[in-house]
Image (cartoon, rainbow, N blue to C red; front, side):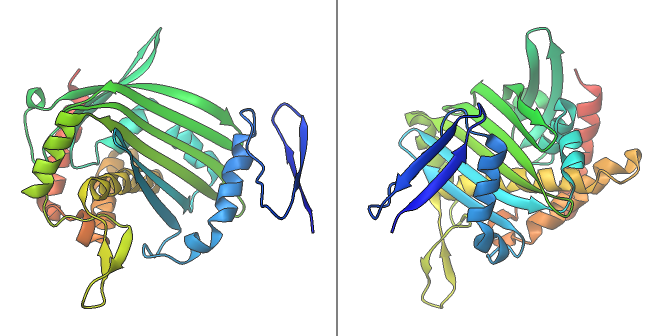
Length: 300
């Protein structure tokens, strides 16, 4: 029995591939429609989005190579595409998102003739002086924007502690019933010294920390979660996703109340996954973020 796979590329060319019993797949062409590709991904994840450990329509994946770490989240959000696009297709709003993360101490968008950048300081999970937090300069680029699809890309060449090649990308496509399907990718490269630093952290204050991927079952029947650097990547990818969701959820609040609503919502969301994400209590987190938000508004 043969099946015909029909695909229309963005250039309008039609490709008809004959697939036999050997199971040859139709590879996506470079000019394929990204909105259609993302919708196809949504369809392929339908069962996982419906039933998973997160108790929400979300799928998380991670990957580790000798020189790079990568996390991906696919999720459905209950906001219409127009609202998602208007909110996140804006570099200043990305700073509102990024500063919710425990380690983000400051973010400021700079629009120049050569392009838009985000100056982001990454530091400790406690309050600290801005001068003590290393700064990353992300290039901000709108890779695509249509009435039903967008992709935003952030790239930083250099990072702290032997890391480099930071990439944050978010693509989104409209779904029926005023919903939107998101794909967030977070990745960076790590050199030898960076690996040593991460292993030192994971062997001391980071020991016992885990990610979300289930790799087996413990003796008591509870799931065994992935640890190490992949666990670290999964935790931070989830933190960034929850920051995006908190930002979108606060959009309907009065302007003066939005920052407070984002902070409270982000903390509440992370506590739903306290095994992986709990680092401090609500009061010190909110106090720290209020101070950082004020600094973000005033510093240059």
